[in-house]
Image (cartoon, rainbow, N blue to C red; front, top):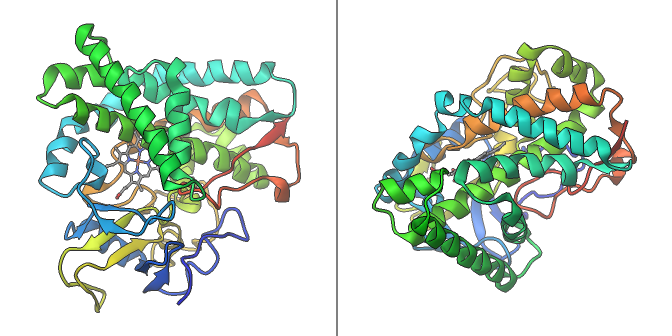
Length: 383
Ligand code: HEM
């Protein structure tokens, strides 16, 4: 049986071999044999059906996959009705209208961060100085978490998403992160502030542990993904000067460009695991009860049934039904926020530094084949 496709010979394409088979079995590094689905319509069918349960743990850091009782607040790993209860408390905060109110603040954060980039000696690592800080600042402000504490969650999430780190190390980092959040919540109960966490504490019956779990989820999901889209997306545009010019110069294109780049790069690829809670049909194949299944979102987003010439990047392409944010009840809660951050950040960066170029050959840019969220570890640039 083949291993789950993970390595990429082209930094912008799905993992090698991911598009070979629509639905079949692959082996994980842990030895687990799981189903692997890559056809766009089947991926949507699978994620749209909560009988493919999200209450799963393991599959990374050498830990075998197993059915798991979710941690309090971690609704990404819950099925309805538990999932529905928690998600409903948050959806109002992430509507397009609500997120639009954040636009001026996000523009300011991006501009300040570009001031900071300009002051650095060149070459500058754009991941460290731009791609990572922008979404971290935004999510900290939204939640009401002091940005000075960013190292706690940046380090914890880097450990959690690193396939080469042991389970013990990942759990230790997460444990420290949990303690930090419970202390923060205790301080907020004593003296309420203005963020989303404060609102949850004041306006719901959630326990401290549940609010801490929600905070962990939002902090990790809210910065790693967007940061990697910013880093890898900038690298992609630097390789496609014609497309780069369109994103830089035409504000209308910036909007379609973000969706097209999300589709094309699919930085969250095969991280999302499900377990069949009963025998389930998927495109004529029975997935037996208890079997685990994942999808390649990157492969599904290159399915010729989704759009014409899926292997071409076309920043003017009208929005497609891509699955870069997943699909169904767990579809990304933060997608409006992520889109807005990217829509603001790419053109602002390209306008501020019109001479932006790579400071090392493309082959020397370290890609994140070893991480659960794909992207680049560093992006050395000059201008
Ligand atoms: C480019 C950026 C992003 C990408 C590609 C992305 C991708 C995804 C994907 C694929 C899922 C589905 C998980 C599943 O089905 O199991 C998801 C869920 C989620 N995302 Fe994002 N995400 C991004 C940004 C964000 C941001 C900025 C936030 C935070 C505010 C966020 C918060 C969440 C949450 C809370 C969930 C769980 C939703 C649920 O289980 O109901 N994401 N994301």
